Image 1 (spheres, rainbow, N blue to C red):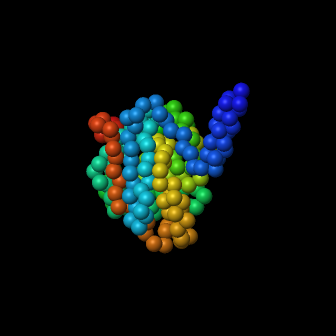
Image 2 (cartoon, rainbow, N blue to C red):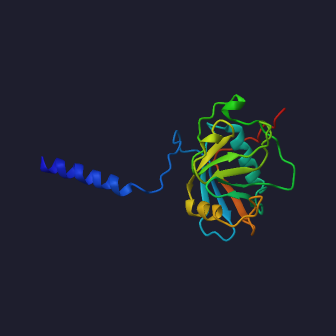
Length: 200
């Protein structure tokens, strides 16, 4: 009886000690989800994300295709709103426009826009996403079902917080450039096709 009580007490203490730590609920249906590493100039810790092909397959293919083409290298996080999100991925060349894989556009996508989730930026046109993406700084449920969320941060939250707190101008552009050195993807040996462009 004493041993059982002691075991219960130890488990309770371990649970309490974990409270307050940053935790991430992952889609762990398999161990082949692509892993993205975003290295940012001046920030020692990269942001590492897991992409969810089973949630937004064409969006994931688009992101992987651009990263493998080094499209993002040298681009910036050009729009930063603390307590909301950091947005980057704007390039100087034309890219494929893809259909928005979110529920208000007829796709099943239940990934919520919680802290650390990556999603595709777009205009007011639902099928207008190209290369720009944003990473949620804090939970923003008003975006759920309206934008194509497709992955989640698994480490690098300190870097996310640091970028979110930089000084910005009246258009939410950082006063000093927040430059992406590189975005690389570990596809776990899986080859992903090029994305399907909208209208094709």
